[in-house]
Amino acid sequence: MSADLVIRNAIVVTCDGDGGVIGDGGVVVEKGRIVRVAGSDDLEQAAQEARTVIDGRGHILMPGLINAHCHAADSLFRGLVEDLPLEPWLQKVWTAEGAILNPQTSYLGSVLGCAELLLSGVTSVMDMFWYPEETVRAARKVGMRVATGGIFFDGPGVTGGDLDARIAAAEDFFAGFGDADDVFAATMPHGAYTVGPENLKIARAIADRHGGLFSTHAAETRAEQDDITGRYGSSVIRHLDHLGLLDERTTLAHCVHVDEEEIGILARSGATVSHNPMSNLKLASGIAPVPDMLAAGVNVALGTDGAISGNDLDMWMALRMAATLHKGATQRADAVSTAQALAMATTAGARALGAGDRLGSLAAGKHADMILIDVRRPHAVPLFDPVTHLVYSTAKSDVRHVFVGGEQVVRDGALTRHSIDETLDEVARLAPRIAATIA
Image (cartoon, helix red, strand yellow):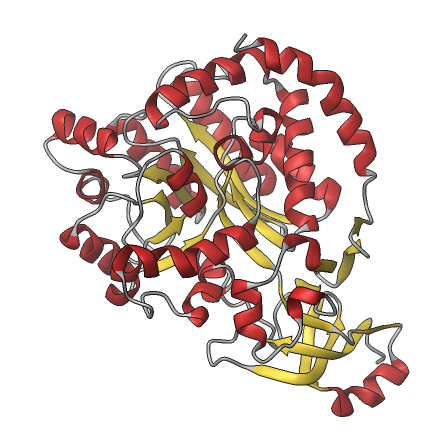
């Protein structure tokens, strides 16, 4: 049988955990999955018979990035609320969201955010937002995978639902998307300070019943820690652990303010921490103790948060910050290695999705979610170590081609499924209404 796709003559960074790099190689793809990773000479026969052959010369071929925490539709509010810490910032954000968001505008913002992610090489995203069905529709519009699901929030929030409505919506989401190959269904309570203990347990029980994921914000600020400690007599992570919410299907966004014992709880439970360095710095939340988490064996993935808090969805900036920020904070040059940083954006993210067997590295049997990065640019020459280049030098504009399940969804820096100009025009028409929400 002839292959569907062969990419060869590329520098291959497999992200396989062993530092696997092939100086001149590629992959063979059949039915959306990688069937072979090898040197270019060994792929010559497959290339002669393949339906599509791509010359990767002058490019790094690597797995697509995985963004472990995002609010894609909040791209509509990019730059709207500035120079405030999280708690007062959130009040303004929620006011703007409440005035603007409905299923149609959430879809529009999600398309905008998903397009930005995909164009920059993100092939899977864990996204928390008010209308998760619209997030899925947007992700499918551009051609990427998404983890999302029913939102839990005590009080009306944007959708105005009571608890029964939120439960029904979460169950409906699993019914509609629980078996989808491109969707990782989840329940997503906003946080321990906005969702009470019983409702957190209800959200978790729904996820457990369907074998889904569970994600929430946790320990983002000192004010949050003080609030939860005052209410329940224990810190955020201890509170979540006491409620039985932490295991390998749990992803906690931020975890900036955690102590040594809490890090031990995270490691023991198998929960993932999604590190969001840009958002944490911009909102003055602090710096997460990532080196201590890594040393304890915590699975640390990487996220951008929403463009409303970090102003863009640039995983390459997040990657570079994750590799450098902690060196400065600890005054240890080895605080986070290049390999550890790259793993946060690939294999650790795949583990957070419960998809380590399918995503996160280039290996036979895995989904052909891959990106080609142009290294024929001044900031990429000379290239002594491809992994170092990816972590410290690569920009989102270097991503030229993106494949999801073997389908080319970005070609020469442009989406193949959707004309982004349509989306940009719609957002421009909506912008005056958005600006008026905080006038």
